[in-house]
Length: 99
Image 1 (cartoon, rainbow, N blue to C red):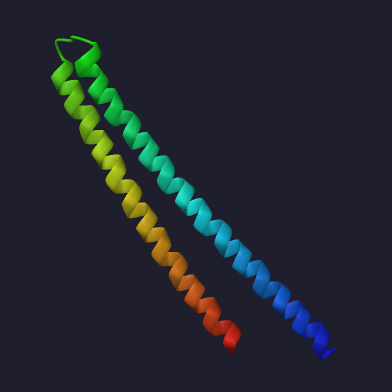
Image 2 (cartoon, helix red, strand yellow):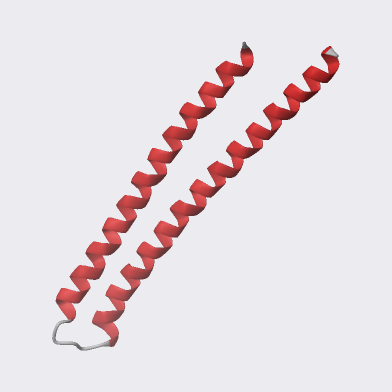
């Protein structure tokens, strides 16, 4: 019976570890999505000035550049916040399995 209990416990540890790895990768994908969107707005701002001659081009560029910067900072902030949360969970589970 002891062997079966150890096998079940090892299986649960493996499942938790794999779930944590999936969560880490999802967090990285989210960061990359923020960065990609930020770059799209940056490119849109650059394109406005070089491809189109609009009377309101400069204010539109400033808005697009600002939004790009805000998205970039928000993406990094969100990533770091989630990363810290996952580290706390990992430490919590690691202490729980040693006991």
